[in-house]
Image (cartoon, rainbow, N blue to C red; front, side, top):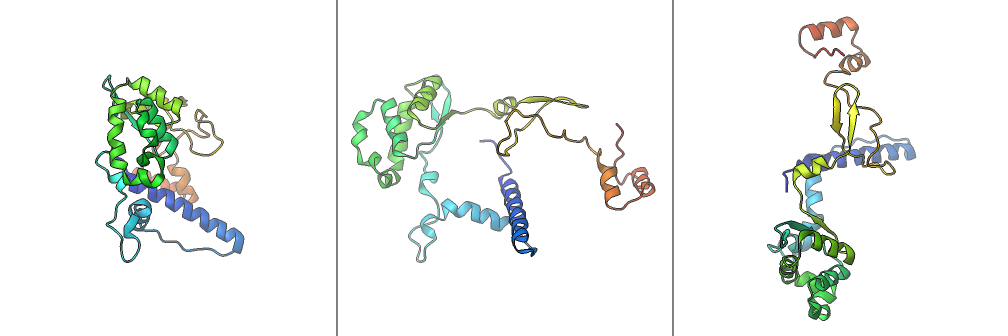
Length: 232
């Protein structure tokens, strides 16, 4: 998996939610709010949703950590043609689908599969069955079989594959480039940008004018190199 700035991004989303909650509170009550968010606190809460596990009660029932996620058997699966696939089996019908794909019909009545508690307790044993199933299929065969059985699956792809799958558009000045689809509901993934990104320094003068700087003061800042000078 590619390294990712997850703490920065999660904290940014939490901050956006806090701002929206504050605006909603003001709309309902007429009162403003003063919110201070620490990245450590946000990431601790984010992490311990699942990894608090049995360490949350007092006295603690076990060490912190969600065993299912920490299992050494939890990994991508190698197929017969050398590809890698990732699956996400959680519900009973997911496990039963995998069992049928692998021809292990004897496991359909196994208590390790039949109940949620059984799957949690015996997850390592079940995980060890997955590679035996995947290695008898090509990548495409396995992906197709999982899709037909309702098992969440995806071929493991590279960072370049993900980047190259993005839709393309044309910037009016900078040429063709890839756009990251909007996450807003109702917006098609291939929708054109509402407004193209400005080039470096393009809005600097406008921003400084809004902050109360005069044209002469901005010229002085540009001439002295404090801010960049944008020319179209």
